[in-house]
Length: 358
Image (cartoon, rainbow, N blue to C red; front, side, top):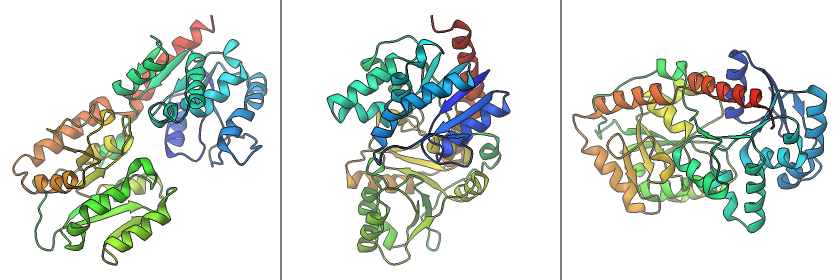
C-alpha cells in the first residue's frame, strides 16, 4: 500500500509513525509545511500564518496526489492537514484517513464558529477517523456523528519496555529527593507554571527535584517565572535528544508529572508507565483511560493545594509501589504497544483502501 502522509515533519510523533509504517512494509511519502529531516516533500509556505498556509496548500496537495498516485492519503489533525485535504477535494478520488490526537478536537472548535466549521469540514470529508481515546471519540462524534472511527492509542515500544525498572518505594528521605520529570513543552495548555507555583516550597527544600524540557512557546516566560519562585539551580532543563537517549534519560526519574488542562491519551504518559515511573497527572477525561486513581495520583489541575497534597499522598504510599509500577508497565505493554497499534492502524487503512471512495 502506498500512502501520502501529511503531517508536521518536525514532530517526533510524525517521525515515529513514519518509521513504523515503513518497517511494516508501507510505502510512505511524507509531505509537510514544517521542515523535518525525514520529510520527502516540503510543501510551500505562502504566508507567515500557519492557518493560511494550511488553506493555501490544498492545491499543492491535489497536484501531489495526481503526481504520486497514492492508494490512500493519511492527514494528521483535523484543524491542520485534515482541513487542507478536505479543501483539496482529493477525497473524491482517493480514500482519506484522518488522525485526531487532541487539541484539534478538544480546543480548536471552541475558539470560534470559523474554527469549529473548519474542523467539522475536515472530519466530514474523511473516509475513516483515528483517535487515541474514548473521550476523544465521543468529542468527534459530537461534531460529526460517524461509525467510521477507531480508537487506537500511540504509546510505547520495545526500547522503552526493555528499560523498565520497578521501585519498591519512592522515599522522601534526606539527601534523596524524589526525582520528577515533566516532559511537556512550555505551552499554555500544559500548565507548567502552575506546577512551579504549587511545588516551589518542596523544590526549595530539596524534597524533590524537577526537570522540564527547554522548549515551547512560553519557555522564556516560564524561565523568568521559575527564577522568581525557586532557588537558583533548583530546576533542571533538558535539550531535545534522540529517542533512545531520551528514554534512558527519562528512565532515571521516579515520577512522571503532568498538569495539562486538555489532553487525549498522552503518549508521554504511556511511555512513562512503560519505563516504570509513577504517574501524577491532572484529573481530566483524556487521561482516565490510563490512570484511575488506583494506579497513580489524579489531582485537580486548577488547584495548587491539590497538586501539593498529591506529593503528600506519594509520601505515604507504602508497600504498593512495586505492584503499581509493574501493573502499569503491563498495561502499557498490552494496550499501548506502538508497533502492534500501528499494525492495527494499517489493517484498517487497507480495508478503507479496498473499499475505495464509494
